[in-house]
Each structure stands twice: as structure tokens, then as C-alpha cells.
Image (cartoon, rainbow, N blue to C red):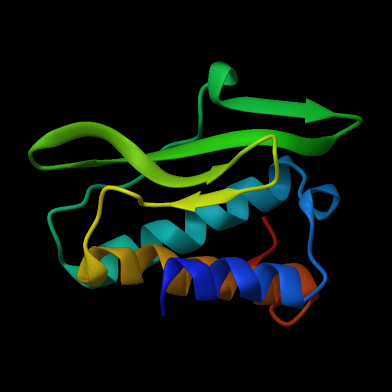
Length: 121
């Protein structure tokens, strides 16, 4: 799945930033970490974003930058929810690595729609 297909999936399922609270960010991190682990790639687990990487208003997402580290780098974009509504997905990565993030993002979108409530934290 391409980045554009993942972004369109979010949009076509009538999801938006107002659907995203901190719990949903934690769920996304949990899903992505499982995908990273299962990929057996050079990627390392993701952590909770730092305060400077998050912005909420009335408990709803305005901006969030999730980062991932690897065996040869410290911090690169995993998924970014930009203030202008654009969702960045591993802009630095090739197709194989991008797939970890796009498939995880799609799984998370299904969770937001209510298809997988077992992911609740």
C-alpha cells in the first residue's frame, strides 16, 4: 500500500483529527511497534512522543510527530499529523519499510472506525 492510499483510506472512512485523542496515539504506537517487531528489520521500537511533538486543543489532536529509530539512525519520521491536515508517512523510507507504517496506519484506522476495540489501552 502506498502512502497516498493510506492517507486516502483515512479520509474515505470519514476520519479526521477530531477523532484522535492521546489514547488513540498510544494505540497507533502499539500497532506500529508490533509491525516493526514482526518485520525483523533494522527499525527499533517507538516511544511516546515528547511534549514538543504533540499539540492538542480541547483534547483533540492538532499536531503529532511520531518518530522511529533504527540501528544506524536516532530519529526519523514514522507518522506525522501536520497542522494543515497532511499526514506524513515515513517520507525517508523505501517501499519495503514504508509498508510497515502504511499497513499499521490502516489497521489503526480500522480501530478508529470501531472495527477492533480489543486494541483499547
